[in-house]
Length: 303
Image (cartoon, rainbow, N blue to C red; front, side):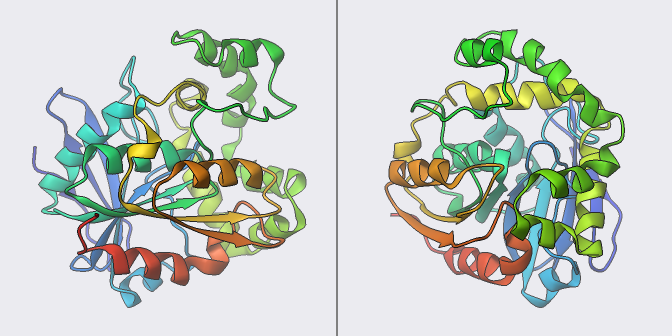
C-alpha cells in the first residue's frame, strides 16, 4: 500500500500505489512537498503529467503541492471495468492517505469536472475548495450537443449501458495514432486565443506529453471516460456545499461557455470567472490567480 516515488525538485515526482482491490494507480506530484495540497483531476484525454504552468518551478514558488493521479485506464493506471464517476473518491482517499494528506482542494480541467465535484460531494470533511477550468454540467439538463457527435451516440448517451463507449471508440481511435500531434490539431480547430496559447512551445510540449501518456492504453479508455460524462454522474451537483471557483473563456470552442453558465447555476456556492475572448486553455495565462484562489480555501471548513 505504500507508494514508491522518484524525487525531483520541481517534479514530476512519480509514484505507484497498489489499491485495496489490487489495481495500480499511477500519480505525479509537482511543487512543494510541504505545500498546500491541490488534487488535480485531469482532462479527457490527459494523464498524471497534466500541469497548468509552463515552468513547473512556479508550484514551489507558490507553496503548492499539486498531486495528479491517472484515472483508471489512463496513463499507467490499471483499468477498472464498469467503473462509475462515484468510484473515483474511493481511489483518491487511498492515495491521499498514503501520501499523508488530509484536507485539500480539488482542481479539474475540462472533462475532470465530474471527478472533482464527486470528490467534494463524497468527502465534505476533506475537500475544502473546488476549482473547475472549462467544465461542463452533468447531462441531467439538456445539452447543446456538438455537431461532430454522431446521432447514434446522442441517442445512446443517457442509457446506462456500454453502448455509448462502444459507439465512441471509433470516433476517438484516430487520436491514438500520433497523440503527440494533438496540440497542433487543437491549434487548427480552436479559437484564436487558444491558438495563441498552444502556439507557445512550452505549452505545446506540456500538452503533447500529457496527451501521449494519457492515451498509451488506447482509445477505449477515452471512449469510456466520455461515455461516463454523458450519463448521470450518480450524485446531485446541487448538494456540493464547498465553495466552487469556476473559470471559463467566453470563446471556448471545446466546452462552450453556455455549458459553464449552466454548471454555475447548479452550484449553491460559486464564484464564476468569465474571461472575455479567451478559450479552453486560459489557465496557462491565469494559473497564479487560479492556485491562489484555491490555496486560500484550504484550511477552511466548508459551511
